[in-house]
Image 1 (cartoon, rainbow, N blue to C red):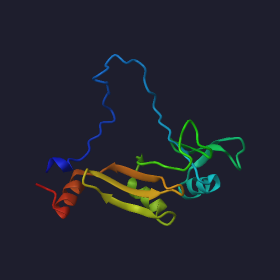
Image 2: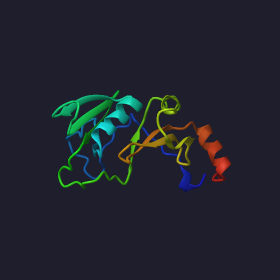
Image 3: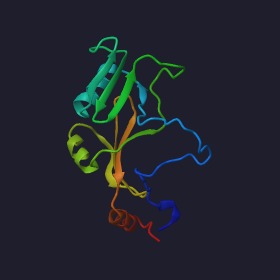
Image 4: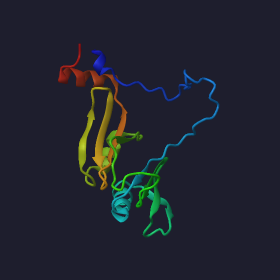
Length: 164
């Protein structure tokens, strides 16, 4: 296997310490919530609640037409707002991808198949993850991923000619 195609390895039970600052005592917590600008809050809420199965769990100032809202599905939360905050741009921009790690990529893909357009996948990618991606109405790219089984990674490499 070439070094450019080494599967990603995660160790969720591994204790992470900062080798540069091992004495940092304050835990960052167990949540990171993206707060994203929405072009159209009603369209955004409809997409996340009707298509992806999220629930609106917080809002300001009113539930039916919020300037800010939180949506949740299971342990995942996302905030959306309509007015740029804290020096952010006036139009939705994001140069990356928001990754979610569901219980089963295959089951979630099946649940969403007739509700949203897939940008890619589901497929096993060269770095050892099974994933698929979709785009929300604001243009944000959402990916759903899980580690692939070693046999799937090897099979993918042999098909693509990347195995050494």
